[in-house]
Length: 237
Image (tube, rainbow, N blue to C red):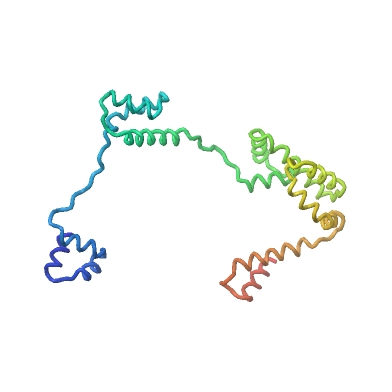
């Protein structure tokens, strides 16, 4: 290609036309035109420390530090720089770190675990119950959190307001309780919570639809008008 560019330029083509024809920068075209010798290929120079790679790996496995490895290989004839040894040692350590890093054999998504915590144990299948037990074995603190959530869920299902007040007092008794912050928010709106327990009706459905409307509105912002928003809102209502 360089020869073609040189020939084209000698035949009268300008640098601008060659730039457009070969889709190259004008500086590159100019460099090719002025080039008198073939371009050289830059090859990566092998570090002198590579000749002592086996010794360095062995010393690294023995737990030797970088400052200890450098003089030891110099006694064997190494006359390169300290930085070359450091680069080689850091590369060896990096590979060992990735090789020894334990990959997780089994993972459970937080959303999935949260669902297991909330629903009744009888609604879990055998596999889910087994995985939940494995979580409790690995993280014993989760057992306490699970019991608190199940107690709270049972009181809501049974509309047990007095039991809820006892649960609330217990959670507010100490900042180390798992739902201390959540209990504070409930206490701030205790009258509404009381009505939710004692009355057979609720505006929860309305609030849910309002939040749904806001969500759809955000998704359609700048893309659709009121007519589309109305259709999306009524869809699966």
